[in-house]
Amino acid sequence: MAHNWGTSSRASRLPGNWKTIRARVIARDPLCQICRVRPSVIADHIEAMTDDHRLEALQGVCEPCHRLKTSAEANAARAANPSPGRRRPPETHPGLR
Image (cartoon, rainbow, N blue to C red; front, side, top):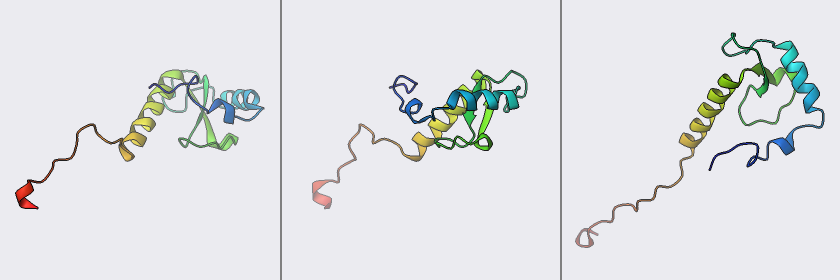
């Protein structure tokens, strides 16, 4: 299942003044802090999966860089905690127990 604002609880954990914080981050970082080419449109949490909304913990990024960063973070999280496979583990031969 895809994770997005429709399936995530992240929006409910944002502070009430998030729009102001986001505007300040984008004003502070007019260019994407990852590629340094495109304009910032997203206030991104530098450290993944945190609810630290201080200005020092946020950076302005463009949509393509944010998408790549988020994908890499999700892949790393899945690799660190893989879901069980569908295959059963091999059974030992009854005569070898």
